[in-house]
Every structure is written in structure tokens, then in C-alpha cells.
Length: 94
Image (cartoon, rainbow, N blue to C red; front, side, top):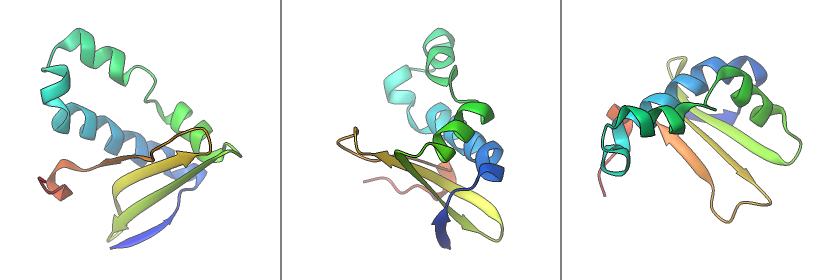
């Protein structure tokens, strides 16, 4: 596995990872309620991910293996904790 800075061309794969992570790993929070899930995923578009990746005040990175994106993470000076999303099959339970 490798970790590197996210690039503009990573927006689509990062968006897929974020969507799957929310859909599959946050079930306890959204309860698979379609209305709640739609709200959570509404701004998780390739265009928005691209804007986060290129934003000067946000650092975005990727973890990948064999050219497959496994996780996307970002942090900004305004955030107290970094945000990260990963592929469900690559996420360990605490």
C-alpha cells in the first residue's frame, strides 16, 4: 500500500470510496434510511471532491494499492480532526 497526495484526476475514485464508506460503514448512524443516506451523499460528487482536493486550505491524500484507491483523507486548518473514508473491505473493526 502507498499513501500520496490526492490529485485532481483522483476525484472520481475518491468519490466512489467516500460513497461506499458512508453507505457501508456508517449504517449504525444512517440506519440505511434512503432519505438520510441521500442527504449524506448529496455533496459527495466528483466535482466537489475535486474542489476539496484542489482547495489551498485543505490537504487531501489517498491510500492505494495496485492502482486501486482504498481510502481518501483530508484535513484543513478549520477542522479539529481529519476526515477519512476507506473501502469497507479494507477497514478493520476497533
